[in-house]
Amino acid sequence: MTDATSPDEATKLSALSERLHFFFSNANLRQDKWMRTELEKSGCLTLDALLRFQTIKKISEDTTLLARAAKGEDETMGERLKELIVLDEERGEVRRVVPWDWKTMGDGSKLSLWVKNIPLTRPEEAGDGEEATDTSNFKPRYAVTRDEVKALFEPYGRVAIVQLRYGHKEPEGQSERNGRGSHPPGRRNNRGESYPLGAAIVEFENEEGMNKACLDLLPPESEPDNKHEKDDNGDENKENEPKTVLELKGNKLTVRKMTPLKCFQDIGKDKRSRDGDQKPQDGDNHKTESKRKDEEDDKEVEVEFEPVIVDWEKGCVIALGGLKKCDRESIREAVSDILGVTKDVKNSGLYVDYNRGDTVGKLRMKDASKSAEMKELVDKLSDGTVLIAGDKVESAKILEGEEEEEYWKKFIDFLNNRKRQREEEKAQSRKRQKRFSGGGGRGRGGRGRGGRGGRR
Image (cartoon, rainbow, N blue to C red; front, side, top):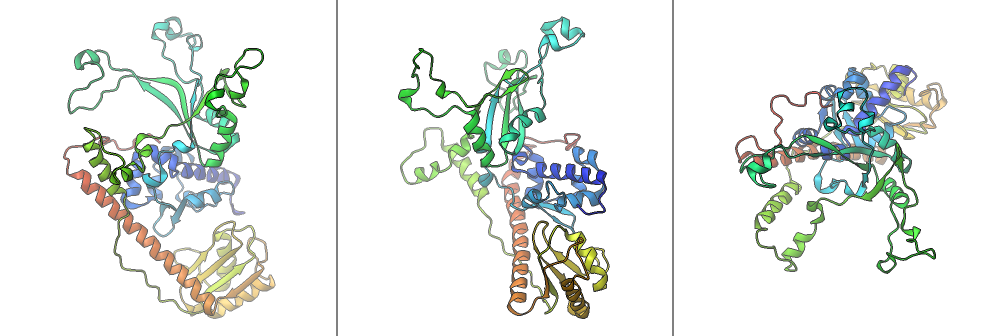
């Protein structure tokens, strides 16, 4: 956070950072078909598109503030966010550092707990209305919020997402019309009214949090021959009980690990089938073919693209060492006047290569026309005449020789890797669209003209 950031801006910056981290997280992308589709098509979301998300729009409609959040300027969330997303300032596009991919991200079960006995509302809590006097019309709801459940598990580690689970009643008369558990051919299941199951899925951000929660909330794994062991008083051995039983509004919660989806349980089975150790059962041929197509979709697509070539000039890069609490804006603010360039990012010709929290950074000019100014800046940074965010840097020098060549090599490699990634994402998207475009009709999961509406 820069000195010019007001308390109100700082609060908004923190809230925007939290929203960006959530939307681009693995946990959310597993649930959010719209975002997955957008990222598969272009590999990014624009700042303008993100500002249409309702929970972001409620915080701020300021594109500049959202861009600052996307760059990781918030003191609390900044470093975590920079590990997840990166902002292309010129294009105004936000993309994940590691592209989304089902095969590598999985279904989240390894990081998730299934929590039962979540409190529901009771008839006596319904109030003074008709619903309170006529219990036959009472419809229970969750008596707690996602945030309350999240707060209960946060001591073990950061919680990525909490899902309160619902079931669906079969529409009245459907079983009589279609036969028990069946549906008309060619039509989607018309799910009936939803109702709370009294259960939730809690997914942690990393294995460390998950493991801590499991050690405390799950009963220890016991040997089969000790499963029904009694103590001296004839009671079942308490050693098989969890260390901690969480309570929420008087309800004792039961916790267990999530079971992976079958498609992720089956990873590796295909190899055994090819080796002859396992044969497909009758009626499984269509499943094998479907799985084969899914695997083909998941394969990396080799693309050819014209590589980026940078005709760089010598003496255009200043290396800074011993940087303290600063950011790109404070560095630009400190050096622009001496270099004789505008502080506008797009028109200055000065590029600041720096990630908040690092102790080293680079200043890169587009050409060598400012060589005299660069030498003056190095001298003033070295003797402390010029401070960055109020602090003197430990070292400043113009790169030369092998150091300069190594810098440009890494920079060009970065540009080409980014371009390759974008081309591969486009090719993968075209491949999937080609596969599914031949079926005709709307297919499953269409949103219609309404688009996203007010979901966010």
